[in-house]
Length: 140
Image (cartoon, rainbow, N blue to C red; front, side, top):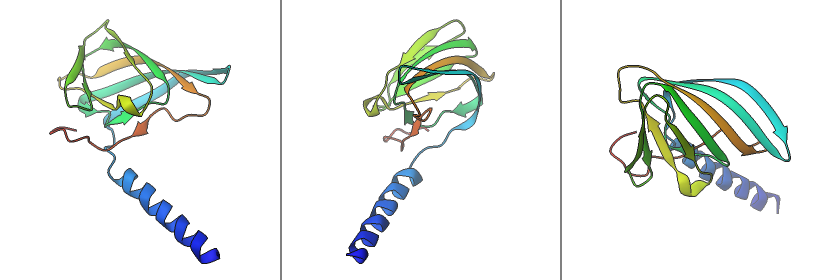
């Protein structure tokens, strides 16, 4: 019985590790949490995010909805089918819906940093994002 439980734990660990190993981590991205409030089972987090020239968020999804304002630079935003679903310049706002069905990547293809103000509305205790593997696109 203990051997079966151990084998199950090892297989689960290997499966989870394989998913993490295939994730595409961010590159050239920094973030600072400006404020965080929890109410009604939700975390409201205001964060400033900077993507350096050539930076990428890596493929990911969120467990809640994000609302973003581009303060400077131009962000190219791709969906998991590799299509561009938005190119956002200064003053643009966009929404990233929740869920595993909304895997995406943000990239700075320009020569100046992209600076975003982002409001995360997440289930209480949820991570800011969940890393995902590249869905088959020829870019990260």
